[in-house]
Length: 246
Ligand code: IPE
Ligand code: IPE
Ligand code: MG
Image (tube, rainbow, N blue to C red):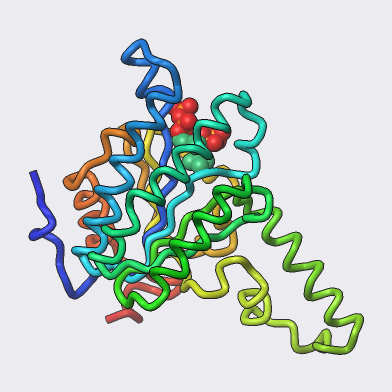
């Protein structure tokens, strides 16, 4: 079984994004309620964040709650929000100890005010950290993000702040929630599902995709390492030929 030490330090992906999926099924397998899976998912988050910090991954983005997840049973949504607040409170020290800076993407205004307050506090108390940037995608939906960006750009064109001719990829990037992030290099999804579920559609244009048949609460150091080793063994051609790269 591979460990962190097996990773090539010269080929670390700059931006790793994770669709943390399978908490509900993990609990069901054990004859428990879905929320039990979410509670156990928190430990996998902590493990993954710490391991990414150890690997000096610059950007780690975690899909924690989608715009569509609001349609889940009320009790489940409430539990997820409570877990978010409790974990933020608990993890502040560890984030600072590991030099991790917290950020968010998504419609943060739609979260309960307690969660917003807690997030603001941890974001501001970790803002001067210079290690890994941990971004939580909360009430995040890629289509909503693109819709907001289009609206904002259209309004700027209308008010002569930017001209139509000047709209390019950089302009679009700067109007996304992710304006402070580079493109995703490696996207991992747990649980065996092989879909994107409205996550970072624009930003994964050239990401390497890695699907693993393990439920999120069981995702451990060696799973993360396997994903990164797989990434390191791939040739990213960005449209060019293999010969052109060498
Ligand atoms: C991922 O696990 C956590 C969230 C979406 C919040 P799920 O809750 O989706 O678990 P499954 O996919 O139903 O097993
Ligand atoms: C995606 O998982 C969202 C998060 C992991 C937060 P879902 O469980 O909501 O995705 P679908 O519904 O299976 O596509
Ligand atoms: Mg799921």
